[in-house]
Length: 56
Image (cartoon, rainbow, N blue to C red):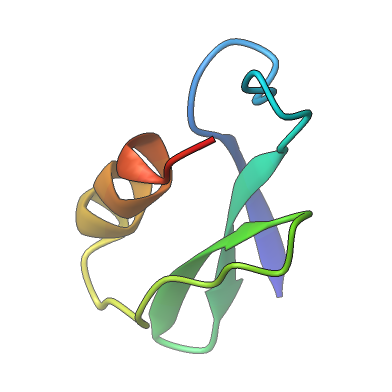
């Protein structure tokens, strides 16, 4: 599993959310410290988009 970084800047929104994109095998998943998790994506850029659109 490898962390691909945060969605923007330091990854913190107004609510202190920290969103990262994590690789799990052939898939990438956007995850947040608030417990939110996006769908598993084969395309990393789609997972990054999910992270960027997560409401903070």
